[in-house]
Amino acid sequence: MALGKTFEYNSHMATIYTHQDSNIRKTWLLMFFFLVIVIAIGWGFSWYYDNSFILYIAVAFAILTNIYSYWNSDKLVVKMTGAKPITRESHQMLWDVVENLSITAGLPMPKAMVVEDPAPNAFATGRDPEHAVVAATTGLLQILDRVELEGVMAHELSHVGNRDMLVSTVAVVLVGFIAILADFFLRMTFYGGGNRNNKGGALFLVVGIVAAILLPIASQLIQLAISRKREFLADASGALLTRYPEGLASALEKISQYSRPMKKQSHATAHLFIANPFGSGGEAKKFMNKMFSSHPPVEERTRALRG
Image (cartoon, rainbow, N blue to C red; front, top):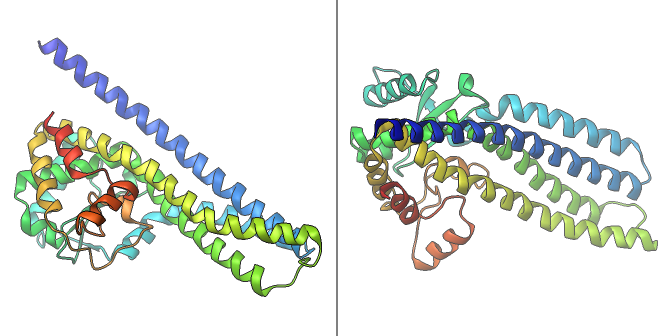
């Protein structure tokens, strides 16, 4: 019996480490995808305006953005969410829970932070375990007991251990820049000059408008594909860490009962949180959330945990 449990544990660990490698590959693929998209847009602009200098700017922009997103994505997420660092004295229970779980998981203790918001939620960010951040909202700390908080923080630390944060935080920056580029392209297309009078220019105009509309949608779909699978894996990894799946299941149920959105929400950072920061809303909104949310339905997650 003990041998069977050991085998099950080691098999799960192998899955987690495989997932780490997979996330690192996904990050490089995402950055490569962004590089290709920006260079393609730059080439299109340089042809449209007959100015090769635009292509050089696009290449430099893509490379610098990739580098910046890798090294500073955690700082950007912290700023966007309004998270503030804590001390053991200011938030002893949260500090102790994060510290104890980090030791159990064999991870360096991440920076622990709090977001002043009545909506119960939590997130993790950072490019690697040595530069990780875990944060909880004040609303989460008010409604959860220690066991439930351990379940949530174990989930977030699982993202750290699984290297989920790397691909997710890079996605925040790159997807945001793609949306900006799409908007910039549309403005330049309508208000700029270029070869619009010839047949090729007209075709480029149509293709450009379609691309500008579809690129943000494609970026959002990439986020969804990344996020839903990793939430289930982090739930399982967190349950393995605490050895008590009911703690996280109970916490998820409490979190889901709060229907109002967070005060500071963004589609760029929504997939980083343990629950949808836009709230649940009515039945129609719940259906839309199930289709387009970066998070699986709570019912499916709790069922998997208790199963």
